[in-house]
Image 1 (cartoon, rainbow, N blue to C red):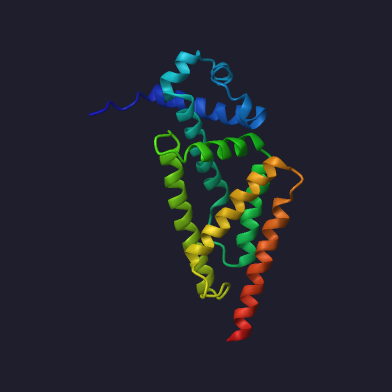
Image 2: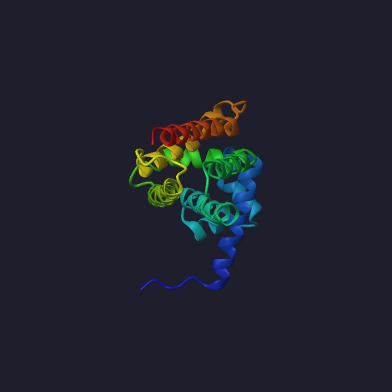
Amino acid sequence: MPRRPYPKGVAKREEILATALEVIAARGFGGATLRELADASNLSITGLVHHFGTKEHLLTEVLRRRDELDADAYEDSAPETIASMVDRLTTLVDHNASVPGLVALYSNLAADGTAPDHPAHEYFSERITRSQKLGRETLEGLQDAGELPREVDAGDLALLVTAAVDGLQLLWEYDDSIDMTRSLKALGTLLELAKAGATAAR
């Protein structure tokens, strides 16, 4: 049976994660070398590796911590209208645009994590499953409220919304003149038109 981590070790891990979030957000993904992260945490590289094993494991845990913080800040009650759902999405991408280093980290690990043996593979698999469950439930709620037509499968639409957000962020990394908020509002307009068309057809 594995030993439980000592409270002091848990506290140090939390400190390292908080520091790594700050370093990557401020200096970018490229500045997040083990040396940079170790120095910022007042540790040797050996000491840093002791807590996480590899750089990939550390960066995966940084993303997991970012998700926890985002959930606390942006996920409250389910949106009741298409407009409120789009507002929530635009608030999130606006925040992400303010921390481009974390967006780059997400994109890079998401690509590398497609390999089953990569340390981030399990994290992304779990994240996709969780986000699709939440997306389906949210969109089914909007269908129940008459905000979306039932002719569209909520799970399929949830996949498209996730693809829109992740895809926009990847394109934005290449060209930061792309207005992610405006593009998501265009998606919202299409959903509103679908709602109006379904209502008129009844």
